[in-house]
View 1 (cartoon, each protein chain N blue to C red):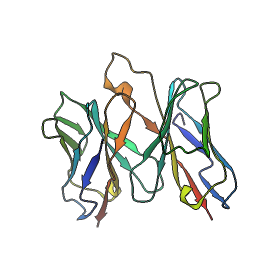
View 2: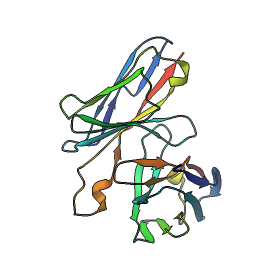
View 3: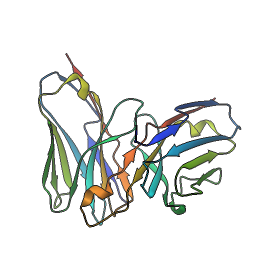
Length: 119
Length: 111
């Protein structure tokens, strides 16, 4: 399977604990995105990497959230001191570098997500 | 503020029937509009993507339309199947990377 993979698929943690999620993008995709999705809502943008550089962060990404992509391949999203409001599906997506070959290069391919439950 | 509004929020139809989902947006400047299908507990999967110059795009039984003047889009599903039961999300991009998602329409197809 050469799609975007995320681990773990499910995580249950107690309030106050730290959690870390991993995303492996499609190989050769230099752009990687993190989104958060709560039940019944569309995904909300959190942050975006081009290669190893974190180019944009949403104000949804509080100080307790940190994302890294150290070698420009896989990425991790860490949430420190989790709160019940952090319970959501965390989605990762990747896309290739845009080119003049057409707008298909803007396509973002999503992983299956990591569902976080904070008790 | 960039916004994407979808209607209806939920829809129940019988297998074999057609349906149309609506999307209105205020995202500017407009780059492209996408429709995604999201099965419960899974990540979204792209159905169509349209730029400013395209006003219709088909993918099998799915046909999307775009009116950039009125900032409206629709997704028409023909001859629905049970496997079409999912959330359908309209997503608008102001430039190549940043996406604004609608809240989705939850479609249930009943036998």
